[in-house]
Image 1 (tube, one colour):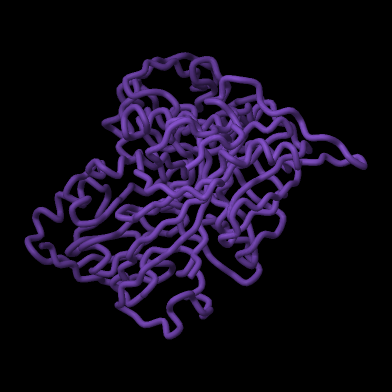
Image 2: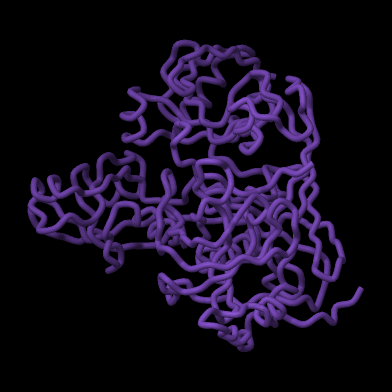
Length: 485
């Protein structure tokens, strides 16, 4: 939800940088089938990564993206570019906009990284590297060959994207096991920080299964490997030369590296990759509950011996949870025999299952445990999409208006001090021209409270050609006129 930037606050940044014929090279991996490169030599008590990097770097690629950014409706010339919008908010100069001229489309050239996971040209990177759509994506190999890439699909919830280049017999990376990685082990990253291609940095794993604010699908690997804008989408290697993560975010006070970086575990990314390649989108199961953590006080009040599980705060009345008989106040302790230690684990456990899957929930109700069975729905909020297909949206009319919406959770409405509303996850086209921005909360349309994305579509249909939206942006509320073509 809403994030407050302060001079001393830690800010999470994604890392897409914004900066003004020989296939006989050594193979880094042959489609993940053979043994990975040997561990690096040890010199003076420290690992020497030179041989390892020489073997694996041919499978690491530089990705450049060119797209036209339209200004949003409030005169922000940077559109939805988070990096440049950050500069604008703090009055800092931005590349290509010395005068910060509003309402002027601009060309954006951004740089990221990626790595080849199959010899026929599939490449993994970050979703924020390839952008929202309509961009020209170019992949450059270590042997200086360049290819125009096709975006197979991207998933903004996990920040994973798959792109494809038309080439054969390419070097590939070996896929490792993040679960076996240990805190304190050495790791290395290869990428293009600030456009400096194939830069190598090294460090140690600082923590595992790290969860970031507003993120419950990815148990990040934290490291102190130096990561900067342009490293996005690049691989994080273990000592055996296997990829265990995709470098994705940093925490920083300055916008640059300050010793804390985060990588998406490769097992999470490969599951997304397989679905994108096979289906062009990501399918996730949905139970239909709003949950919260079980604190010691709550555990005591519900008669639990220890704080564990996910407390059900609210049930979607037309969901799998409602059909299964779940109730507000139930505590989910296990899903298919797997412990739910904290509430943050449950969305990923459920999301990893396919729609239509039958699951067994062990719940705590009335001072004792019991089991109930549920059949999962399809998650309409899944954000994966194929660039060549129509952008799937649970509410087609909202999509035509250039909006991607989701309902607010009870903790979010409580934090904002409101009773209802829907969150704008993305705004383009008509919505952007009207002045809506990502992060806005639509409270009402023509003085009618908005309680869900589906109801918003119904109100739009009844509004005719013009509507007035009451929007909460940060701590302020404003009315935005909306013209419907």
